[in-house]
Image (cartoon, rainbow, N blue to C red; front, side, top):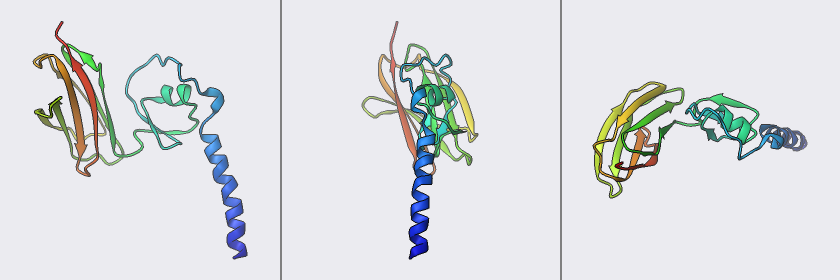
Length: 157
C-alpha cells in the first residue's frame, strides 16, 4: 500500500510536466500565417492531428510531434470552392488499409464511388467540372469503419 502511494505521488508530477511541456503557450499564435498550405499531417503530443508542422508549432505551440495522422487516416481537398478540379490528398498511418472515396451531392446521392490506392500517401487531382453548381461532400472510409468527410462547393463561372 505504501509503495503504491509513493508511485502515485511520483507519477502525477511527471505526467503533469509532460503535459505542460507539450504546448509552449508563448508560441501559440492563432493568427500566424503558415506560408505553405500543403497537407502533411503531424500528430501532436496532445493527441491531435494538425495539417502540417507549421500549424502545429507556430499556431498551436506544439513542442513534440510524429509524422502522419494520430489515428487511421486523414485527407484534405483544395480548394473547397472550385469550378474545375479538386486536389485530393490522403495520408494513412503506419498500416495502410482498404479505403473507399465517395463523392455525393447535398441530398446524399452517390455520384462517384472509387477505391483509393493503398499507400501511406495518395494524391490525385479530381475533375469536378461535370458537376452542376452546388454543395457536395467527399466521404472517405476504411476497412475498420473509420470515416472522414469534407464539404466543397462547385460553382459555374
